[in-house]
Length: 485
Image (cartoon, rainbow, N blue to C red; front, side):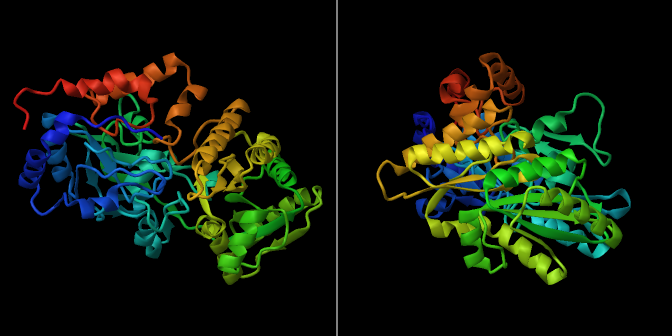
């Protein structure tokens, strides 16, 4: 992965920039190299670069003050939520100021009668549901990192989760946002009903990876908790068979709340880690349905009938709250458990559900071709793949080989009618693959949108677009005021 050369003029003014930041927001600036090291990467930890400085505001007004200052000084800015991005979305550049949202965790409003909650963007995903649990509500998007990931980052990457099959991803549950633009101006998009007059700029912001503005507050849809929910485990002797079963369930018009897939290596690692009681098989589906007890029984009976046509090696319905919790504990801990197999890169290409058998077979072929193990754990119901490429960071050339394998897997996803990312974002990880999915005119249209929001390309500008394509625009920041800092 390559980062653009830092702006030498910004680095030369480092001391003055840090002092200006301290004057704007006393007690919130981190510039000691030993302390900025904590911000040198996100969850794509194979690549690191310490920022010029880090600032931790507590309010929209403070974020606006900081962005206005950085805009006037032509200093690049990288927004950061909780740093759980798997695509390098919040990885800084050497000449950038990181604006972190970790202190912005307040609940600003709860309106159960309108089914909404308004929070600061640094609040963690899981704690949003926690804030309304006692009222009988929950927030639906549930990334595997929900214990740690921040709502602002969820909005930036349009995050999903295991239950997105029924409830949708972040954009389907985001009603409004307060956004600070690079020049420090504050805009409110959407609203309590999720719609406003004119263009859907809220939809433009969600998934824009921090390139258009920094979301500081979010109005989120909350839903009544279902009467009940119950998962079932279905084991198969081949990954391709499990993929075909998923397509058959969706084709039958059944919409479970979640369909999760795990293959044999992941099952083994997860079982050793969590003791969830998973069967010994080559592929496993976790299918969860919800509703009243009769509704759950009816849906699971239909799913069982479909599954039996694929000759499963195991079919087990949860019969208690404890068993359900163990089933999901295994799946939620899968990414951590896979660390026992070695270093890995986690991808998130998305494909049509009907292409699951083809793509799983193709991933197996590519794995053998490159001589690197690949384990699959993903949101099968909506085709959001998560191949984990296992490599050894201490073996020269292994990381490069893993990246090349990952690129070929993502190309395969695009070839079957899918896309490069479902919820992790493009970041730096898939930046150079954008031309595989988009023609030059498409990339130009997207960059024109960024031009409108951030004319000097100061916000997270090293991400999303191939560097050679975005270079002329990124160079605009060199036209800084003569008296800056």
